[in-house]
Length: 301
Image 1 (spheres, rainbow, N blue to C red):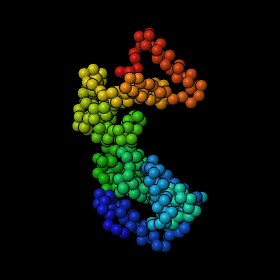
Image 2 (spheres, rainbow, N blue to C red):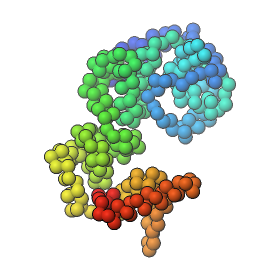
Image 3 (cartoon, one colour):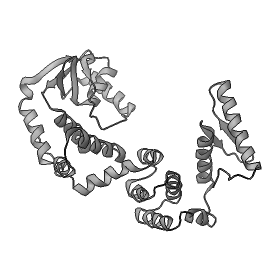
Image 4 (cartoon, helix red, strand yellow):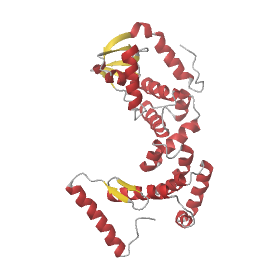
């Protein structure tokens, strides 16, 4: 096997992959693509469709250059490694795919899937965190043992696991790249999800560094109303303001809202799927108007 340039990865897993390779020559088979089930331990939740299509085109032209790794199960085969190639073969409408059959434990399968993605630096922070959590729960490894297997420090594992305590909306911001891990970590100290969200938006809008984000969170923990006071003294650009309003309207109305700003006139587009959905949106707007007239707290803060 070619020397692994990712020297930070664990020795335990390196040995595991080496053992698999020594048996590869006797295990290659042509397996029906439809007989293969996805790897339940796959840490990646999203696959780039464009790259899958490109790989499918390459496979149609050159064939499969490297077999996938599978495990025999009762009703076919379970994928261990090579999900991109498998998906691309299905996209290319191939009937069979070269595969190496290996009898691996669930623990080994989970380790291989995680390391395969870590070697490509292919996981976002939330996918990596979820993968660590699943390995811990389904393999009975301790954090120290997991750290050794993947070649990371125990503190690295612990820091990623803490991200799972963030509000789902914050996790989505990390997944789509709006918020990096350094900016997100301080938010874990804020218990209130709404305040977490408000702080995250402030961090993004002002492009705060991890250190500045940490300082802001410290001030918020001392005074939860800190941002409300501070926002009165800062100027948000139109784009940031519009994005903030769009998000709040989307949450309020339960549907996608787009604000299109023009030179002289602007408009708000509200999506609905049926007459009933439109009635629901109108009711939400009317309820909001009623609350404002009766002096209740406004939605925008």
